[in-house]
Image (cartoon, rainbow, N blue to C red; front, side, top):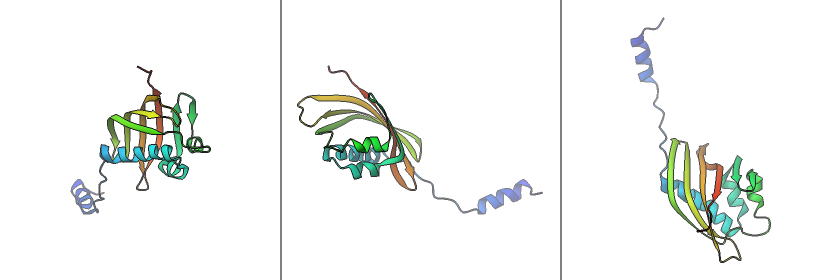
Amino acid sequence: MVDVTQRTTQFAKMPVEERKTAPSLAEILELEKQVWTALVEGNASADRALLSADFLGVYPTGFANRDDHVGQFADAPTMARYELSETKLRVLTADIVLLSYRADYQRPGSDAWEAMLISSLWERRHNVWVNSFSQDTPLEAQ
């Protein structure tokens, strides 16, 4: 039987693993902007690289997986311009964060601006940040 003193000493001798730090709002916002830029550029491969294989989107049109999200680029870009504001980052763990924000955007060929509130869950998996969940809530025109 090992006494408490011996266990404490053994624990103290164990190598200390480097602790991961949570990302900043600016870091996660930059990743989110890469998703939006892919929508503007019609860059399906960039979009796919930013989404996890098990991505789930919850949209006014229903649920979507990664292939559904990337599939919207089949014909052309889905956005012409965008602006993100009212950004908030909720750190759940050092490897999981929730970004919430307002997106104002124009679709290709339209002069009208639309707006929605978005929450995106970003996870660090194998040292790479991926978007695993997104929910869009359209705002009524004011």
